[in-house]
Image (cartoon, rainbow, N blue to C red; front, top):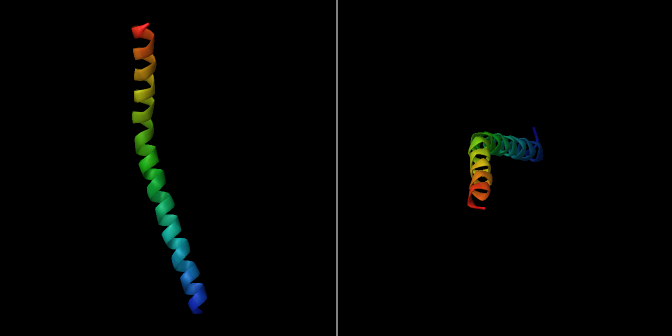
Length: 48
């Protein structure tokens, strides 16, 4: 493999790991965001 091919492979692997990490964090936070949104809607409805 050339140095350029090695660098490209390394960048691709790092990018894939970062994307997977972001997806895992996002997936873990989605339920909390939904709970917060529902809570905000309930708070707005009750405070009127």
